[in-house]
Image (cartoon, rainbow, N blue to C red):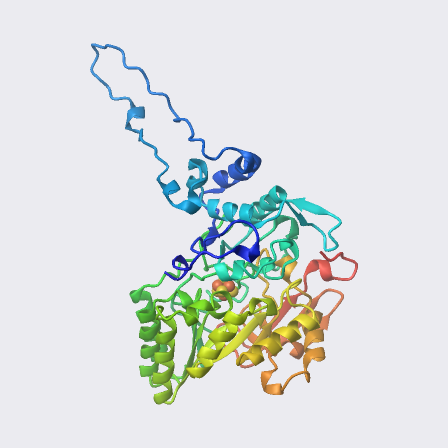
Length: 497
Ligand code: SF4
């Protein structure tokens, strides 16, 4: 298990030591009342004596010396020995029963340990938020979000916990209720209409020669802006996810469909995240695709290189060995394989990333990157330029920069189309053309990717841009016009967040 074997590390050089095996995750479905109760009781949880063993919920009912038939009181069926066995784990010696019962205690404990007493509320630091207020903000954000929270030790350690509210990495993974704004009415859970374009569950066939295979629906981290929020990750308080669990029967149906479509040449194996495929599963999928005469190229999509690059360097781990094996075998068969990864900010790169990317380069694995343009994360020339150059320096091809998809609960992260147009205009020419990404809009409604600058019209007053996609003709798409809508608060006369 990738995240369960990492050693403890001193978190950013301050605060108590955090064991990296403590994968921080929280979900709220089925636990909302608990989660709310926990947040409401946060102060006492932080300040109180957590060693206190809670009293038994029920007092034993005295049994009278009775002549009536003995009826065993229901209460006696409840466990009387409630030892807090988890306290044997040194990291959890202060975890109370109440906390242990909560799905979200690991996130709470982490935030308590990582945060200072106060964090800046505004960028200048003139307004502050207490630790308790920030944690409450996070848990209310989780309740409102469409994605569960999950982060790796690596990504947690790249966040500035002295100012998490303005940290561009935290902004991608940690929802804050106070930062969310009302959605544009056109936002949906499945803005690209992937389910409608799936002839087989978990296989999206939109372009004539390319299909997207979704063998799993879990990832090492969950991005709050995930385009596949209809299916990826655990259920949340607001979304019951479409199940795309790994399963041979579903996979076989997908393989059969791919093999039956001679025009299909290119397969994206995504998810979820291919990092969560077992090495033997990755090999199986790769070998099945290599064996199909119609398939000429395929890619594995995984954010793993950005959020858990240490795995690439872990000699005990077989995932990269499996990828290299598939890549080598495909090359001998005259086919190409690539790893498509997902960096959004230069701060996600470290020496670990450099060493991992170098190993992949030496092993002959082609790596390309797909970035999502996000407000407050990478929507300025300096950051996006730094990201593109950092990728190029690590032999990772900057393939796409996407306009953020129109999915629910991400309004505060979307930018107007004008932002991506300006970024491309300013960055083109700053680096060799083959390292310059395409700046694209993945058209809402399933029109596929189009260059952002290729719009038929763009009304900056209403924020509506219109595109056509002549090569995408499936279903009802002949001559279809696709519309992208700028965020409401970016329109003239509205206030930005
Ligand atoms: S890694 Fe990809 S699939 Fe997973 S949550 Fe992030 S955007 Fe969604």
